[in-house]
Image (cartoon, rainbow, N blue to C red; front, side, top):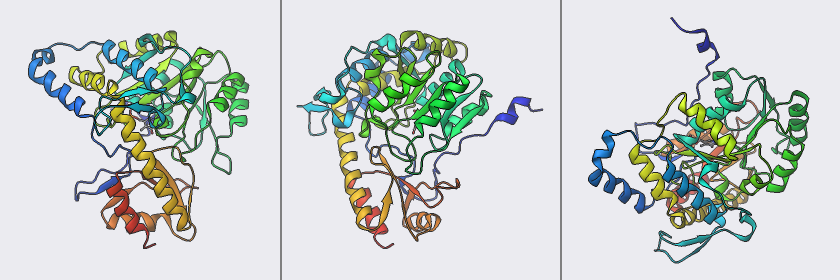
Length: 387
Ligand SMILES: *Cc1c(COP(=O)(O)O)cnc(C)c1O
């Protein structure tokens, strides 16, 4: 009964979502904060007063949403936790936002540089379809959905191991990409390590990478303290930046993701969309996304809170002999010598907190712990101080 294509499928296994108990969920890198109250208002308002629109197809290209995203990027420089905020309410909602000096984008991001889809996972799948063919170069340890799509689209992978210090082996990645004239993809900051390359390091890589292939940087976590590569779009026509509402825009349940790239590349991805799923974002979700992207102040405050808790948690771990890999994301990747990762995971779960652990050889002893609210982190710290 099954098509031969089914043999190439290796489905992604998400962080567990158990129903048996109300766990504190620190296992899927979701944001612990609710979306901006303005998002809730926009959805309620639209359902109440424009309900008839739900009987009609939505804008297939989400044009208003693209404009709102472009505006948000210009305001924040693409790094929420470092953005400057003035005014707004006690949660930052309605604040005036401007980029940190080092994040200023040296041009205006325009809506035709944005493609918006149903979660960045869908966007990534279209990027794979549009641009990856004979081979793609990626790190061995990175977002685990890339190998899933490579299987789905039958794209052979060259998975380059990380260096001993968990950083990308950029030299080997570049040598392989040039030898095979292949595109490159990685997450920056990377997962599950939490380590990021600087913008200048990425720039040096793109300068040395094949010019006739795309260079894809997945910035799912950059708002929590990395350096965005959006400013590099001025220089590179082959750069694609993938971003999501799921982490820093408190919207994992909303399913919105986007790319920022040269309009020609945006058009190519749009062609894939129009050949597969013409209306990827429903009417209400477009309203939600527009309201979210229009309230950068609220999300900047959330990102600053997450970054603050991360610093405090890293200090806690260091004081207790844990080694922590990176420090740029809304999670930390850590282990303690002499403590089994599986035992630690189980002991934490027993106390009602879920964290993530991978069976992958080489990282079995590590935990990937999402940063939650202060209250959640205090609970976790009290559990972990018994180790
Ligand atoms: C969470 C994550 C995504 C997926 O985001 P969605 O928009 O929820 O599909 C993509 N890339 C990386 C690196 C992620 O961590």
